[in-house]
Amino acid sequence: MVYCSTKWLPNGPFIVPKTAFYGDKTALKRTKMNLYEAISMSKRTGIYIHIPFCISKCAYCDFYSLPAGEGLMKRYHQALTRQLVEAAPSLDRYYVDSIYFGGGTPSYYGAARIVDLFNTLKDHYKVLLDAEVTMEVNPDSISDKDLRILRKAGVNRLSIGVQTADDALAKNLGRRHTFQHVTRVMERARKVGFQNISLDLIYGLPSQSKADWADTLNQIIALRPDHISCYGLRIEEGTPLHVFRDSPLIPSEDDQADMYLFMVEALKDVGYRQYEVSNFALPDRESRHNLKYWNREEYAGFGPSAHSYIGDIRYSYIKGIDEYLDALEGNGALLASRDEIPSSEQSVEYLMLGLRTTKGITGDEYHAIYQSSFAPIEALLFDYEKQGWAHRLNGRWSLTPQGFLLSNQLIRAILDARTEERITVGMPWKRSEHTAYIAQAGQK
Image (cartoon, rainbow, N blue to C red; front, side):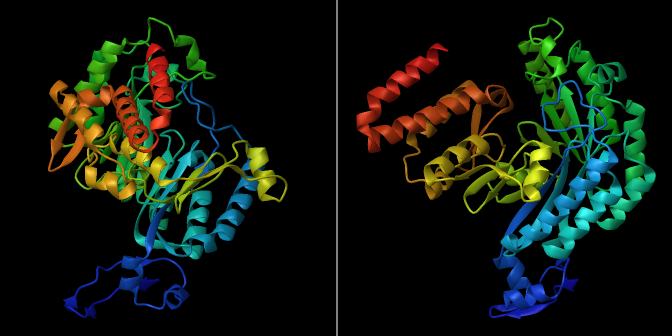
């Protein structure tokens, strides 16, 4: 490992933070500059590693995951490790400041395998010592020994899937743990040194009342996690929960809205700042990795169905694990998609993703991406402000909690206004076609 030290720069003494990265010392030789310059001037990226294995699939889950025996996991581990090594030169100009092991259930995959993958990243990538390293865990599939192994290796953040503090509701979702498992894992994780723990929750569950949701929040707050993610239930086609799509057991839209707004206020009152539609954190405990997605920063994903955004190119890997493994072994295509993102589309992403965060958007940032008028967008935002759906602070526009509830409709209207401006100014011959499209969309 190489450590930064005090450097004297042209403008006088400058104390360089004691930051370092794992790996061999030849990295400095390749950069041909001192470590402070290398880290400050080089690009940074995050790495996502998908672990697609679960003991069993939850009733609501439509992520790519599957049960697996030891043989398949061993084959997957060998192939994934080989891909990480082979891909390293393509990311040589990046420092890695966040790593996220997601799934699936990484804790089911095993702490030893996770550490082995992490060590591969340390050996072949410029992983900063202060990188945020997150692992998703289920409360029923992580042991005290696993926690100690992970923390010792440098994993410094846990994301624990809780969903609800009501054991009966959890059982109906196909969850294998009880809330007692959650409290036990929290206590033991703190004991071995985890100082950054996130808990995931879902509201709007079948038969869940507003009082049930309030009780879950109270019990979660009592555990004092550093970060809380709260998602409204999405009933996806093809999941066991789909049979409840039109069921009266699902809380009404009004009740779910009440649950959301209650959650925002309750968490705010005890020190959790909302920084994205569904995410809340104590000071300096926002998910650095997930912020890369919302801030349109670069990241590289590995594993079946994993997505990446590197150098204005978005690409994804094929979904099926058999096809993925065959491709890594030289049989078949590995990529499912590859798209270069032009500035016009980047501006759309900026609006869509930026308005999901409390950081929000500005006209200057929009213009830096795409040379088009921000006025039609801002006109809508002023209208939203009058309705209590948006607000402006220090030149930045963001949606309010009430606006987040309507974010799909509000953002779609903003994108339509952007397209209208683009057509009016740059492609007036398409105006009638666009007007017809808007009319048709409004009838749906």
